[in-house]
Each structure stands twice: as structure tokens, then as C-alpha cells.
Amino acid sequence: MTVNRLAAGVAATIMLTAGIAQAADVEVAKTPTCGCCSAWIDHLRDNGFEVTAYDVSAEQLNAIKAGLDLDPALTSCHTAMVEGFFIEGHVPASDIRALLDESPANTRGLTVPGMPIGSPGMEMGDRKDAYETLLVDGNGETRIYRRHHQ
Image (tube, rainbow, N blue to C red; front, side):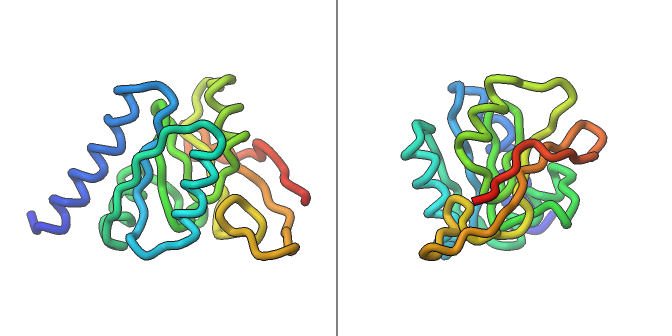
């Protein structure tokens, strides 16, 4: 096993198990230079979440996404775990709170695919594109969880 594959496995293991220690702690894997990821983390902290960020290489981040069996069409620039759910991309803190409150059966996580302008961490002045947060179920199927028409 190469060092990179080993590191990716360790990062995935940390993310999958670290959230068990304390409720509502968010573990985030991101690349070290991604400013929008840091802005999203600030959004979560501003909304009451405890966040631990792990800077990983792009290769390691891709391995984490693959380890979670995330469809590449559903991915974004960072991947997080909270209470056993994955959170992919610029998901608003309010959507994460709702997921944790509801804990719908057969749910793997939430995603905001891509990087929509105006989503948390992707603010660009007055421009705010409409986007959707998708819920991913245990079969990898998606449904609209929340619509954001700003």
C-alpha cells in the first residue's frame, strides 16, 4: 500500500469515527488552500457547530469521497461527517440541523453538488443563484431535501 493510499484510509477512518465522540461535531476534509471551504466552516461555527477541519491532498479527498461511495455528480470541494451522516459541499447549517433533528430512516447524507453562488461559503456580493440540497438515501438515490431560492 502506498503512503498516499494509507493516508487516505486513515483520513477516511478518522472522519467516519470521530463524529461519534461528541454529538453535533462536524469533521471536515478539505484541501489546504480552499478558501470557500474555510468560509463554509466559518458559517457552521457561526451557527453553533463545533468543527474540526482536516487538510488533505486532493487525492486523499477523492479517496474519502470514494470510500463513502459518493456519486461524482453529487460532489463538491469538501466532505464532512456529522453523527454518521455525510455532508457534501456547501450545505447550509440550517439543513444540517434539520437532518439531525429529523434523522430520516435510510439516509446517508446531504449534498449541494458543485459550488452554487450564494450558498454558504460561496458568497459573491449580491449574486445568489437558486440551488437545492439533496438527501442521499441508503441506495444512493437522491431527492430534494430543501430548495434555496434567494
